[in-house]
Amino acid sequence: MTITEKSIKLLWSNAAGRCSFARCSKRLTVEQAADVAPHTLGEMAHIKGKGKGSNRYDKNQTVKQRDSYENLILLCPNHHTLIDKPENENIYSVSVLTRMKIAHENSILKHLEVLKSSSIEKIKDKIAIYLAENRQAWLQYGPLSDIAQKNPHSKELYAVWVSERLSTIVPNNRIIASLLKDNRNLFDKEYQAIISQFLAHVKSYEQWVKDEIPYQAVKQFPVDFEQLILGCKYACT
Image 1 (tube, rainbow, N blue to C red):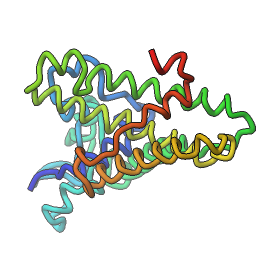
Image 2 (image 1 turned 30 degrees about the horizontal axis):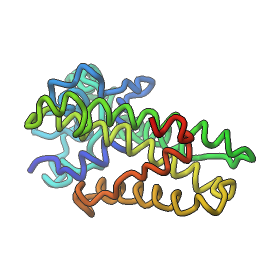
Image 3 (image 1 turned 180 degrees about the vertical axis):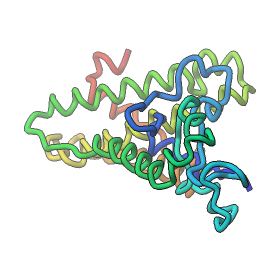
Image 4 (image 1 turned 180 degrees about the horizontal axis):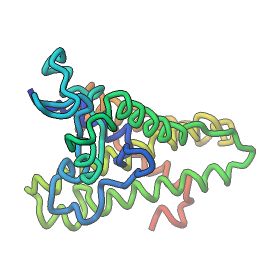
């Protein structure tokens, strides 16, 4: 059995595409990845070893359990090598790696703990940062990007775009949605429908991550939302 697409998507999105090793957090989707599949950059390491003789191997695990999201941790190549060296097995035990994974993913979740604000401009300023990151990912690797148009059949480039969606767009969408839900009352009633459209877009992305719908069924990003946050002066150019 191999690692399922669902496990890959959960691992990459929950770790926000960063190494989960303590005090590393190295971003694993970088520009230089344009000619390789992202799964070779960010390595999906097994907490309990995959094969007999490997570090932390558990003979009582089923094949399905071994390749499940719960038994995987996203690491940079250096730290993946480090934890799998035979002499380090006692240092990087199952419990140590599990705690690292939980701590890292919890640190990502903390970004969702948004305090309410009394200023709509402050909320817009925060959201604008994440929208800019998402737009850059789209412009650089999305289906309409220059590099994708020049290499329309490249599996490697498509893999990079998938990883950008998981490590940049999905985590950023979660933060924006949290900001909106905690501060929605600041927006006039005429904008509530636009906000609902964006939240529906985010919800469909989450359904894709959980393999509940295909990517083609993800609701399109509402351009009106970007205009609402940035103002037509910037978003309409």
